[in-house]
Amino acid sequence: MASITQVQVALAGDKDQQERKKKELAALKTDLSSEKYGLDVAKREKDQLLNQTESKESTYQKLIREKEEAREEFEKDLQALEAELQVAIDPNSIPKVGSGTLKWPFSADFMRRCQDRESWYGNIFCITQYFGNTAFATANAQIYNGSGHNAIDFGASTGTPLEAALAGVIKGTGNTDQYPGCYSYGKWVLIEHANGLSTLYAHMSEISVSEGQRVSTGDVIGYSGNTGFSTGPHLHFAVFASQGVQVVRFGDIKASTNCPNAHIPVAPREAYLNPLSYL
Image (cartoon, rainbow, N blue to C red; front, side):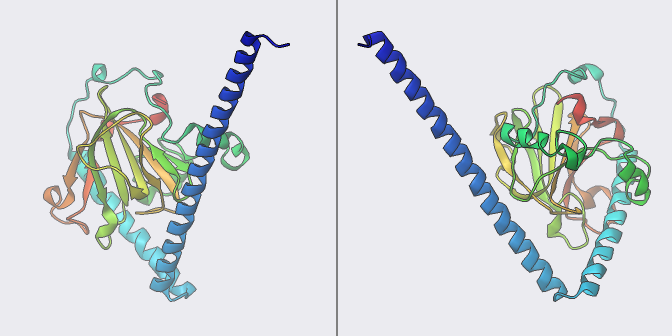
């Protein structure tokens, strides 16, 4: 006959197993909700595009060309502005390279699934473009103006939850798509962290936070998308030295621009940091 202790141990084991199953079911429910949300958003985007083009391929291609031209014009304006900014970044004001102070901007489950997609991306992190003078940035010099890519991009289907890489305060949010011809970040969120770093999340489909709000590491701040100038659903993830980044109304600092009322984060080149140095 089993002792009381053995029965207690068995019951404790059953309880632990039940708790694990509950967590697994909750995670699955969250994943299914996110997938449904992503499908709904994708359908809305498709319907909107079909309405714009009336299902004509020639009209669609014309829209794409106009979008690319507007993007190039905006990038020239932005790079000219950032070249004029003068901010001396104190290296002691930010964490050391390799400190691992930031978490990946996705759930642990998403990052684990990336390992199974290594053959797609060529890496186990779902990265589609790295920081700096990547092959894509070099091939599209008219967009990047030789300055290289100022962030890293992750392939993430529309509706994938995006998580704060570190606790902080929402420094700003915006949507450049509100202004015709302003093809930039689309929906974006900027978080200022207490360690001297700020992180930017762009091309989002939805924003779940507001300016001034405090968030904890891992909080969902919104969902990935395909807004702004984007060739497919992804997250544009940038890291700044907080000393150098500010949110501005573009028209206040650039007299001639095609999107004067758009609010965006701007920074001198030296304030852009390689995200992989801190992940």
